Length: 277
Ligand code: SAM
Image 1: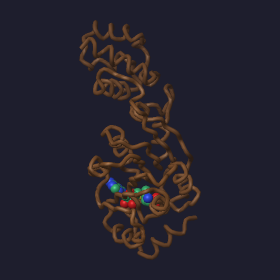
Image 2 (image 1 turned 180 degrees about the horizontal axis):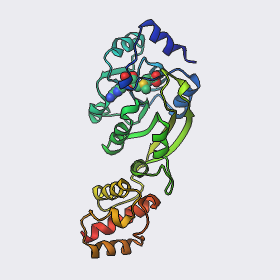
Image 3 (image 1 turned 60 degrees about the vertical axis):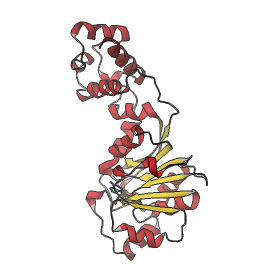
Image 4 (image 1 turned 120 degrees about the vertical axis):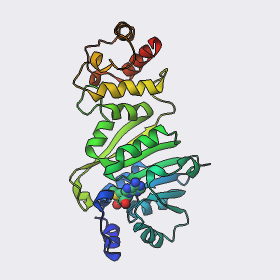
């Protein structure tokens, strides 16, 4: 068990705020798994979201060139500033991680890695932000709710496969590092977690004619996942005849459900819809 977390919580009489997703890590084996899979070197600029009392931060600071931690809870700022004062390679920002200018923050950095035990309530928006806003990271090593990790890593035809799987796999290779039981945290959350790594691909996995349309096709297909593709694509902007043609050109049976389509098939369908719009 990690002594650091317990010591800090006790020393500063820290009271957890549930609404901020404050479940601090107390299991050293999980801490080591996150650090090991982050493969840090002295060239790395690390962004940590939600450092808490600095349990993971300290490990990152020992290995990386520099660490910039972004923490929303201002009660944690003096604790982190005091306890991590010896580290010259530490920068702390007291802000909502969704409102940081990452382009400015990472200017001139060549090797950017994001490592975090993310707060549950903003996991998906934070991941989506890193994926879609052109932040030039090498990979994200993140601990998140088990169900979300399984959706990110899911394959076509499975119950977890959905818009989030496509979004993540469009931009990244995904790999589950390890399962984490709820006993690894204080206080214990109701759900288990997973450490997952998302390695950014040099370019998106598939080339599509219109990225916005591609993601709309995906979103519509999964919004009503029990319906056939034909029914989910009715609002995509094609009349019946052209929609039929789009499915035919893509070589996709409109009676299939969205959850059976590979990312390549979604790309083909959206390109064929694009041609006829
Ligand atoms: N890294 C610590 C650990 O592993 O023990 C704490 C992780 S805890 C799951 C999540 C942390 O994120 C908390 O410190 C919480 O205050 C912080 N946090 C919550 N919402 C945030 C946000 N929108 N932006 C930045 N930090 C946030």
